[in-house]
Image 1 (cartoon, rainbow, N blue to C red):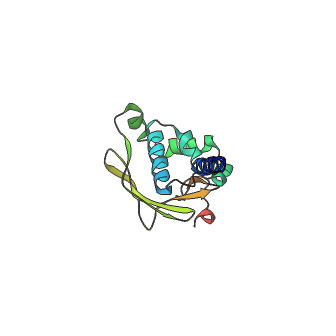
Image 2 (image 1 turned 90 degrees about the vertical axis):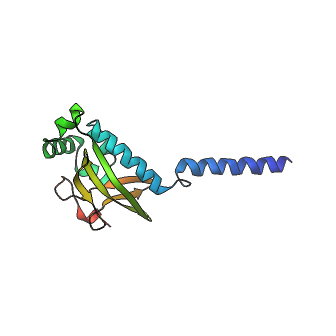
Length: 152
């Protein structure tokens, strides 16, 4: 009986450790959660959360201040609408395909139903799993720090 209790405790401990490390989680669901977090952050003009989702190598090349300055300049015409609540950033038709340590997201990034940036099979948003954590890889060459050598 004591042996059975020890074995049960070991199995339970292993299950808890694997769950904590994310080994039991669904990668597609995790990326959906991150995309939802990113969209909410954009609607709150919380660029730091969006920046923190970028890959570690991206963040080593681009500071938070540079990232925020670029977004503020690039989206100057829509930021006041989002800030005032007159417009909302959204993602429609979201699909995620996971292939090992890479994930490809397609869908339409939009504002109040108007598509601003379509992510297609030919030009998806890309996520990379590094040390068990998913990061958004910069795929847009107009962004500071874009590095095509980081793409799959």
